[in-house]
Amino acid sequence: MTNLPTVAVIGTGFSGMCAAIQLKKQLGITAQVFEISEEVGGTWRDNTYPGCACDIPSPLYSFSFELNPNWSSHYCPQTEIYDYLRFVARKYKIYEQTRFSTEVVRIEWMDQAQMWKVESRNLKSNTQEMTTGYFNYVFAGLGPLRVPNVPFQFKNFTGTTVHTANWDKTVDFKDKNVAVVGSGASAIQAIPELRKVAKHLISYQRTPAWIAPRVQFEYSCVFKFLLKHIPFFMRLYRNIIFFQHESYYVNFGYHKTFIGKLVHRIFKFLTARRLTKAGRPDLIPALTPDFAPGCKRIAKSENYLEALAQPNVTVVPLAVQNTQGNIVIDAQGHQQQVDILVLATGFDVAGFLGNLDIEGREGLSLRDQWKSNFPSMYKGTTIHGFPNFFLLLGAGVGLGHNSVVTVIECQVELAIKCMKHAISKNFIAIEPTLVAQDTYANNMRKSFTGTVWKSGCSSWYLNEDGEPYGLWPGSVTSFWWSTIHPGFKNFIGYKK
Image 1: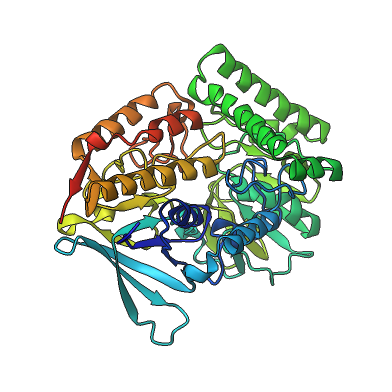
Image 2: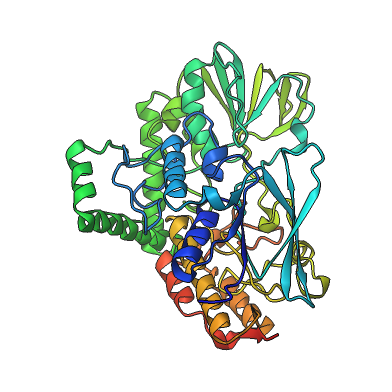
């Protein structure tokens, strides 16, 4: 293929790597990859807190084109996922095409040139001067779990503060009084490990989480031998896990039915039984959510509830109102003096753009456009007014029941189909029509009606208007079906 378009890929997590690999495999394009850190890996490079692991089975949380027979267990720790991503990067030569320690600050669509102007800076340079490049296409694999959320009430704490998204391994927790704020995935994974070394741990929970038992087990040498030497077996095993997780959608999409109500009763029963078995039935009211399972993300753990029941752990079922010196003050005014404050307060996912400024046709700012409106996209990947731009794992594609890696692969496949179509038609630029985008967004909003995400709880899935803008309202299979045919009649093609 002659006169290949130039492509910029931002990020080297699952999204960015998938885009760079498929561009080379399917179109012969070696993209210019930009990475703000010194290594590949994205979320799985940055999150290193104790107990960090994936809550999706390892064989499913990997690329379908690069299955790994060497996972040590069903749910692997952060270190193994990080090693897997670095292996993939070496195999597909991602390192050679990546500018590391380079922050993309701004991208701007040049209307006359019909190209993207990409402004970046080398973070290792003393001057940090801006460098400008021009590209026909941009893939943004920024990732929603990137910018740590640090609420204002913790700014005055004078003791040691550490955020789970920016873990400081030099902090010594041994024999310290530790406060952990939050009840999301990172808190649920970190608390069982931190309480082993802390003198006393206080868990502040504005809202408890539903905890599903994690059926964790090690893969035997024989099983890994079969996975490695019988490719069909490895593919079959992955598909079994995939459809097992697809079946969980029944509870999310139809939570008011008999099945949804049964799931709710089972979760209540399991929570009560585990706490009773751990000798702390008094914690049942505080640790039993008042919303349906799935309204907030369900966490998986075999030891979190049991850790909260230990003698050196205190559960405070209240939000933190303020901090003064090394004192933590809860919503009822109770005070606790602590040595270390651990913020398991998640990420700032608003807009899904992080610190990147994106300016489309006629100076249209994507940040401003999404600031007060539902972040409309077409098929979760392309945006009207932003030609040749593909946002991966942004608004409207998150999941509560299955692997987002599959979603990423569907998005990249859709984007490459758009590029192939543009190349075949001699289009220099392509974008969805506003009508198609609005229709898609409206249909998606309607699809949330009756789902668990609209059942009345607050979560990062929701925007300020209470709309679940961060999620896909269906199964992964339905997302694949919606993206398998781009619907080119719904696109505008621009020629030179």
